[in-house]
Length: 464
View 1 (cartoon, rainbow, N blue to C red):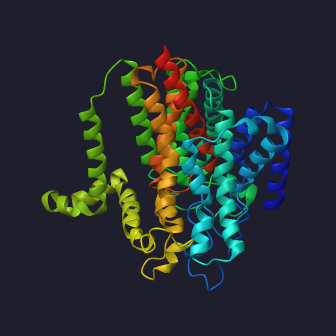
View 2: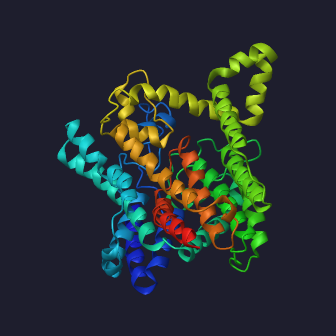
View 3: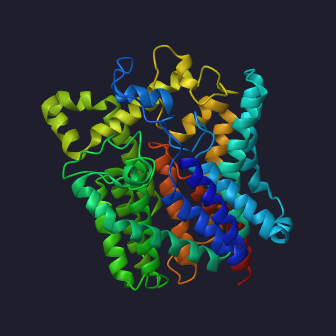
């Protein structure tokens, strides 16, 4: 049934490219597909089988733990379906525009990331079939959305439309998120049956963490807060219209409220930080570099604390007080992630330059057999250091190009504020991918658009 849904979605997506402007068809595929499609045709385990001791162990063995961002046991996922649909739509319905697109130097990191599985597969002597499958996964899941971003979201108006579409997607999710916060996740299983991470971290201090149709509760926990921050920026720049007859200020308040219901402190914290920064910029407050440096030191300090430094603090104020602090603030989950990353460095660096070429690379280390919740580290383990740096550059270069091309004083401008909001939106996703690697690959289109917009703004603003 899932494969039939995927096939119908691809057919509908390609048709949209012929009946709608290609940019809007691409938005419908990238955002609508991610919000509505199933993750993959995942087989429900037989929990009564005595061979399967625990459901968690089974899902670790049969899934990547990272959603569909990277290839796992399943090649056909929502990432590849969305990527294929967008590529086919561009080739069949808008090939003239695609042919006019010229490669630039900032496309090199994405090109390296897309072909990295080819070299890691050949070096590790994987079968030719597996090597080509891994490479095609990257080309389709990452290359397709990025190419769509370069082609369709390389100007202010298209980027604003993309932002509005993202806000609309979160607003549509809002009512059901409220229901799931009370009753627990049920939408995915109602439509698509089995979800391996339906109950992973679902119980919260108040009720449940919603899941909706995304790949993990953590993904919804960054999706909604990041879009709430985006909506706030757009509203303050007076570029957020009524959405489904809902006034802009009500949209913002609704999304902030839903963000709180996700009870994902990392996402909520990033949302609040983004809102505070914009409020300061809007009031003309210049944030000195020492303040930015102090914020970075504080973030590192929190990381050191939760990764083991709490024992030192515990000797001063008592370990019981420290434990209670971590429980109340949910720093324990952050500490778990950082410890997982720290332990995962051992197997990831066994073949640092070329990686293992396989999605379950951590299985090579007998002392550590769990996925690592870090997208960049996953790239390092799979395809080596160059691929991991290329993946990091896919995020960093577009953000830097915009920061370099647009001064901070213009970030609240009625036109440029939307682009600034999208740049910060991408930054929030990058930070989250360091701790939750279930990255929504379709949103890499933002990076493609910013890569084109950044240099253009720099040239345009210099001539003014």
